[in-house]
Length: 409
Ligand code: GDP
Image (cartoon, rainbow, N blue to C red; front, side, top):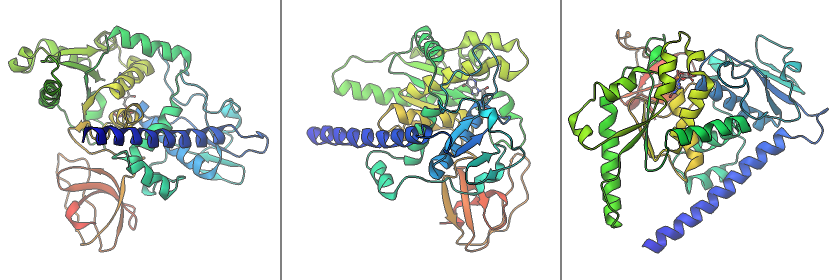
């Protein structure tokens, strides 16, 4: 059996490597056209939202450009952060089209013609359509042979290309790894608070550090069991990489330590508490953490052995997707404390209404209303709320909101 498992893993790794190569070749040939004069382009620009949200918008446009065989160009101010490092810490998405502004003549909406596509990134309604797919059915079935969530796998590989660090950023990441003494095993925790908890239309709620820890504890208990079987000394040092936008979480890890039991097990927290302290004196969140903090946190989370988070955050989704590029199949080692995988730009599946549904009036503590269903309606599902409801868009009415899981297939 052991040989069979090893054989299977070797085979799966080979299939995964081939699939990675196919994606890489597709992106590279798309982004490096033989004749720049005649190549048609797909341009997208900055829009005012957080890092995770922006990367997801770009990823959406990248899928579209790969599907349309147009070169994608992000304009220079794409990431819109100023702060402690250079404005543009990532490699140019297309080395031959470096000046995006030349192409951004059109504003105010999507424009599509033979040569040029301008994608306006404030594209909320875009979620009502499925992400364009340039890959074949055969390719997807190959992905299923080694991976539990091909959508996250492909998205992760696109994002990895978008976020190729320049040497200056690479250096910062490496130094940060050293600085936090990053070594495995380590479990990542992502705690998203601040503006996310108060912004209208958001579906996040406050989750205390105490609610995260039992999941980490369980992961280490299982890990110790597997080590014992290999006759390796246990207990393992219990390390946690803490990524957060809320500096006060660092105080929770010290002063208000949640539970004596965990203290006895010697949990150690790693991360950027110093950055968090500096940031707590500033007023604007985007300058406060800047691009540096969030890029480093997402990179570290992607490397951890497991991740406990709230997937209502796009940053957590981003880390989850990048995890898929770091491990053969990391689709199962995320422990989400609220929603399932998904966000506005990733319609995760399509449902068909089997029963009609009358929308109930919004309860005061809920951010979305229920929506109406008629038998046969098509729904683009964004997230699973794990409470009997999906959150999605009804194609017929254009309404977005919650609908009961048992009424659709
Ligand atoms: P969401 O609001 O969490 O769904 O994701 P967005 O991408 O829209 O915005 C999140 C913003 O919060 C980021 O741009 C960061 O400024 C900040 N942020 C969220 N999580 C982290 C984290 O783990 N570390 C740091 N440094 N900043 C974070």
